[in-house]
Length: 232
Length: 232
DNA sequence: TGAACTAAAACGAGCGCTCGTTCTATAAAA
DNA sequence: TTTTATAGAACGAGCGCTCGTTTTAGTTCA
Image 1 (cartoon, helix red, strand yellow):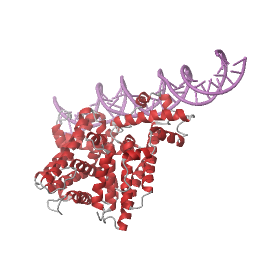
Image 2: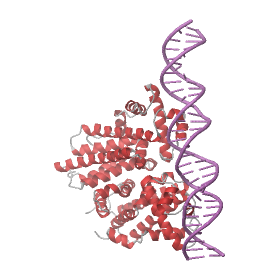
Image 3: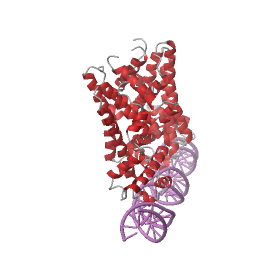
Image 4: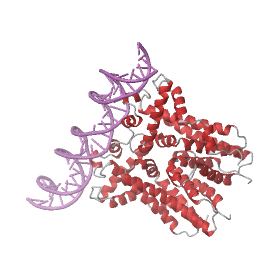
């Protein structure tokens, strides 16, 4: 399919290593991370965030104690508190970074495309691929949203609606051009979002069944396009 | 559509009042609920479960304290502990009751149907309708599954897979009869499940957009059947 | 070279508090 | 009398978080 890309090449193109993400997170949160030397900060943020993601995915954020985190990351309690101001602050750091990365990834991917059908394919693929790489991040954001303090909770809902709106707008643009059928775009956008989220919420199921992200992506795209696209 | 039913009549047919559910829960858990007289037990179980569902949906199970629950339900700490053995036990009571009800509802609905297409429609409608009535229950089960003790966690996963298997089997039966196209039934079953779950996980979104369960149901069925059904 | 100094970073015992849970003593209802 | 409900004290465990102390790494000076 024209404009399609495989997961392998996506992964290579975007630089989504833990180290790169933590460096960005450090530079944008100098007031939370009270560490001066960049290399030390990045090295330990990688440890902390990996440990936090592991523990949160195992038992949930609320049930993860900072003593658990201390043990898992190899840093002392005191050291942890030089990298974030509070447990809630740690959650905020994690979550805001996830939001930034997914939006950037999707917008980078659909930026070049003009044709609505290709644009829709790229948006869906980008979402699946970025969530494939950062699955624990997405899982945590989804599951803990409702426990956030007011402001962060609002941002999480907005991000959810923004991605959905993005899909709906592509669908509507295609309908105006006549390449898509006149289907309820709001509902279709919502269920597409649900299918995208299922990929990172039930990864255990899909990997057990040996369904790769490329296979899932192809299936979902076929399903949607059969319903939506006017001429074959 | 032949065999279809509206939400309103479904609600009337199945007896899913809180009182009926609590009575059943009481009769099946005499060892947990250390109350002798049925009427007293049912009356207070309704109070307790309503309060627990309200609080859990607001702040999550882990963050709900039993002092909160005592205040919200109007029962004392001591009284609460005559209705369940521990906080985990309360979660188990809630969750097992939800499982029982959804399975019974779906199996009752698809029991009469023979034609795969009608069977699939009924299964999907029954799932949506029962989750419409018991939304807080479903939301809680979904969100708290991973915090369950081993045995309960296993049961929750099994229930998830059972409902999915049920869909997949209907799809395969229809494919063997030639009324459905030869589509990957495992993946289709998975994404149908995702769409069903989205209904109770994002109810705030749908009710804000004035999408009724009948409207959502009609959309989802149309989406799936366009892809799956051989002749129109 | 190596001793002395220093700022950054890491340490971990301990504080104050809330949690789930138990228990007591008493009252009300059936 | 028996069953159920009450308010609330008490308990130990575990929580997030702090802070005085120690370690580390790098620089200065003899």
